[in-house]
Image (cartoon, rainbow, N blue to C red; front, top):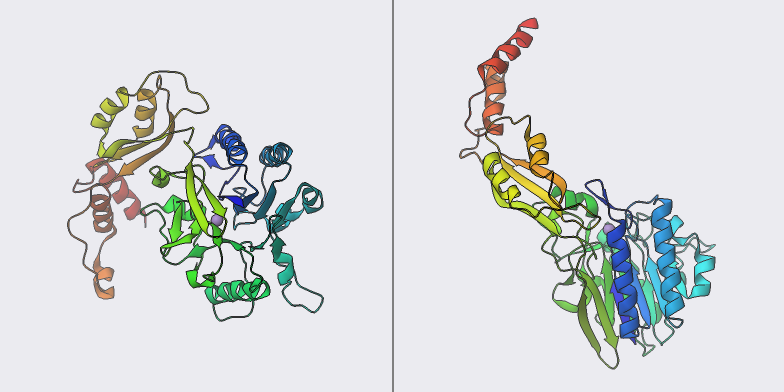
Length: 392
Ligand SMILES: [Mn+2]
């Protein structure tokens, strides 16, 4: 049995306001090719299909067209999709009666039986080639069996599900959209944290060691969890932020015979992410580096550019200057990061009594120094501020 595991497509994501439709289209084309080349039996999509719970018509069209094309090309392909924290569980499941006829199963909502118990059976999907898949979507509060913490509840959920399928002497696959302990997320980038969302971390022990493969979604950097070869994040096919620019992208291929063989298939992202310069520099030096960029028309796969500028004083025309420098360049300006030199000494904590004696001008001057390195606040600014202070 050959399985392809992918996740975190985030269809509809805009990259600093740029539409990524063309990039997603290229990924889908590539993925269709991989499924054909590998003659895959199963395609697993581990959540965050869409970037938002309320995807645009365009995003939905793209998704359904992909499902239509791939099932038409591979009539025996089985597809299993679980919802991520970015997806609307109900919306993703809504077309299930149509999708089921195409051998596509979507799980977003954890159903309850008439007695109010979790409907575990609904989350156990038999695989055409034998065995089954524990198709667990991103779990919201109340979706899992009672436990003291979220992490314990999620673990209990997987343990109880596994009880239903063990001892059948057939491969068991698990899916999940969660953050596992012992996994890495990109450092130093708040935007990624916003994209991922700070989920509570779940112990990798939640996945029984007898499970042939656990297909996870949520983290965008492809990786195994806690050194377990067969518990993996497939990673996002496209970089979602500049912090992800050095990630490798692609899907994971799993071949299950008597044992499990795992291989990565790399996808060359259609749009490069450039950070210029490598470390922040003063504006005049940055402009020289920008001048070296290739000239040309901008198109839908022109690189996204992040410009990192070291500032020691307010630069009101920063954006304009950078835009002028890029006028004839075939890059798409995504963000300008204005970086302030690190201060050498941290300010000591002050007491409440001291706070009473500090005057507003001193506070403003201190903030100015911290924001722009060691520079003094310009006289003009001081005069204007003093006028405001005197008004009180
Ligand atoms: Mn997610």
